[in-house]
Length: 165
Image (cartoon, rainbow, N blue to C red; front, side, top):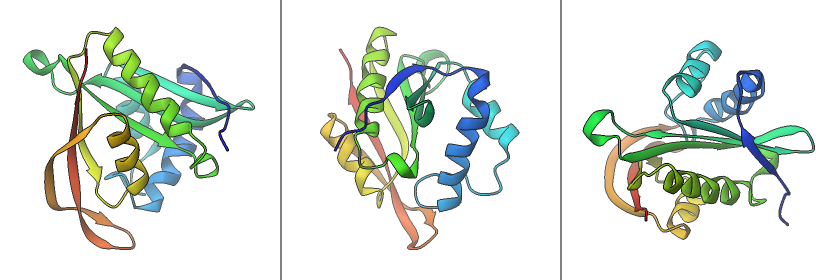
């Protein structure tokens, strides 16, 4: 079953909904390096304060997912994007990640990026790895023991890449 979502650009008015979504993900301790010590202020500053575009997915008036897309590096590396994504636990497995991922690829191409690099995909996040591989990303490097998973202990993280255009 697929969840019908509407995508729109995020605004500062979404800060509370974004914090609710991502603070729960951070507390899970399975997919993001940020953890439960991350503050709302630091999260919002990071999410909106580093440029690029931020988008939310809404279903029935509630934010169920979001992504941010920005240059991975400044200056001579700014032609390569990076992105971060989150899907609310209630919406996982319903195609929201696929919608966010596909939309972010379209936006990255429209903005003229040559590719997208994910710096830190937790290897045990099977749904994300499957999604990104399905959207044409490849694992370029494995970072051994780079993530402290809440349940599994130390696990690997991947650097993933997809060219655009």
